[in-house]
Amino acid sequence: GWFERGELPPVGEVCEAYIDYPPNPPKWIETEIVAHKDGFAIGWCKSVMKGCHGDKAHEFRPIRTERDVLIEIIKKTDDTDDRIADAILAAGFKRGAA
Image (cartoon, helix red, strand yellow):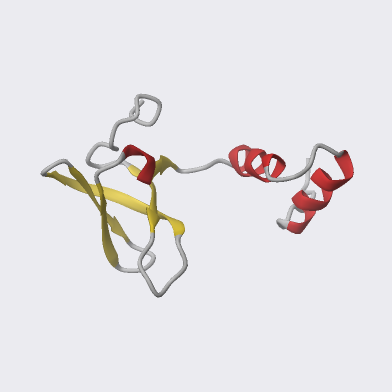
């Protein structure tokens, strides 16, 4: 959908927005897109009770799956298996019931 096409998320979409509001460190946060105005997507970030906005597609992304998170962790490591395993464990991976 919208993400693959490099578009802003549509109204009603629950996605993540890149928030870079000092003094807090930049981070991705869940937001619901509530409007579009003058080329901006306007979102409501319920967890911090704040609005956010962006006019560039890369400022928004779909909610990440566990697989997406693992791929991101792997990409940040060297290519050795032990370093990949260490990074996944450091990120909090726990073996669950199968």
